[in-house]
Amino acid sequence: MEDISLFTRCVFEFIGTAVMILLGDGVVACTTLNKSKGTGGGWAVITLAWGFAVMCGVFIAGPYSGAHLNPAVSIGYALTGNLAWSDVPGYAVAQFLGAMLGALVVYLFYKDQFDATDDADTKLGVFCTMPAIMNRPRNLLCEIVGTFLLVFVILCFSTDGNVADVKLGSSGAFPVTMLIMAIGMSLGGTTGYAINPMRDLPPRIVHALLPIRGKRDSGWGYAWVPVIGPLIGCVLAAFAFLLLFYNV
Image 1: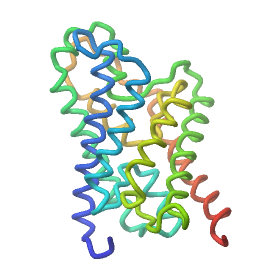
Image 2: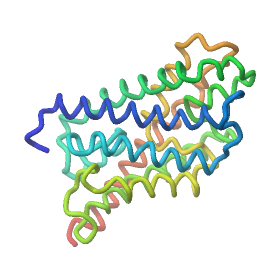
Image 3: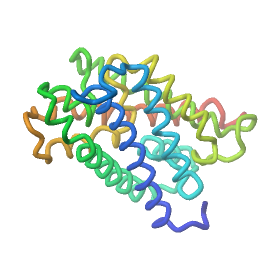
């Protein structure tokens, strides 16, 4: 991976994140918007498709960037010495722009279904997360725990006895897919399991900018939770990993 330029790695982070958001936000649109053949598909469909969405992004970006697709993962790797800190800003910018592109394409793809849907909360829910019950301290805790689990288990994938390489893309797309599905099915019911600032903030900005018919505000009073929570969770996960495995 060191032989691949930072620019090339960022290009693949951009593409991988765009595909992940296109498929991930796409399944929410498919199952929740009116006049979609997938309307009513339910939580199981959403969690399965989000896992597959991450898998597709990993297969695209893995050989080139490690397929972080998430600044929480990038920071976790930097804290454990597996990514240069100087690479983190470039990765984050690429992920941000890719997430915006993916969200925009979802809107263009489902424009007729957005127009056919009256509920403004449903439209917002295609782009970003909102809690089932608004309790910001507990919502923050949920995002911290979910992201801690995500980053900690991904780091564990890289240990001897699991896989030899510490890069996410090389750790295998299928274990990561199963992990995302498990988090969504087990821990997603409270906040919608953002566990990734780029899964939430850039699409939320796209929602704010687009001329969506009958939309509501973009939930900015809550928007800090799915950003700060994952950042805290990834730091805790990295330190827990170092504490447990550094001398093993």
